[in-house]
Length: 222
Image 1 (tube, rainbow, N blue to C red):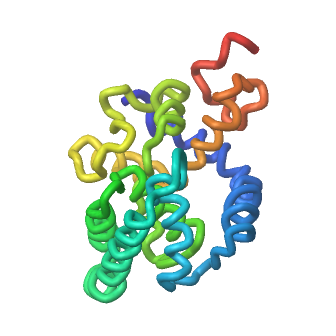
Image 2 (image 1 turned 120 degrees about the horizontal axis):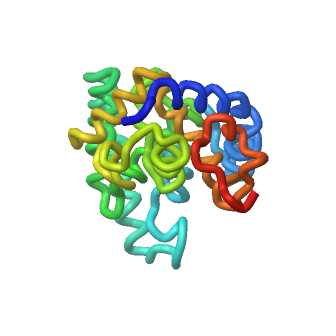
């Protein structure tokens, strides 16, 4: 790990200055208004809307799932929702509750750690369902966030950062997530680096980037 606290502390401060803009463009515009998802609504029907789009295999890319697969997904989601609402949240709190929600979610066929983390990030953080768990959300790792953390900011060595889709419960990922928590809470807000990766890094727009002051590897194109 190289200068993690200093580098990430400044970078997260810079990117969160644009949080309102990002939220307005994505979560309030497309996800909430267009899809009709309601903030703070923990009903199964409301959470199912986003599950089918953000989690269900076939919705993100490729053909839609078959009718039989969709029926099975509904049953699996129903079981997860029932366990969360009737057992997990009534018996556990904090990190333990979050961990158990993830453990049950990845039991659904086709759902891995990354997608489970993304789904819980969306409903807890952005849709404000079960907001008491916000500080216990893990940072989902995708290629954009890992590229920023490892290659652009050089805040982590490659072998100290978890792989894309790696379980949150491996020793490496637990250590990584704890390091993030010591720098900024909620750690899930480091996910705003995804916007940097997709908005600027992907198109070599270094001169316009919000965190260019702390980036250590600017594109040679500009």
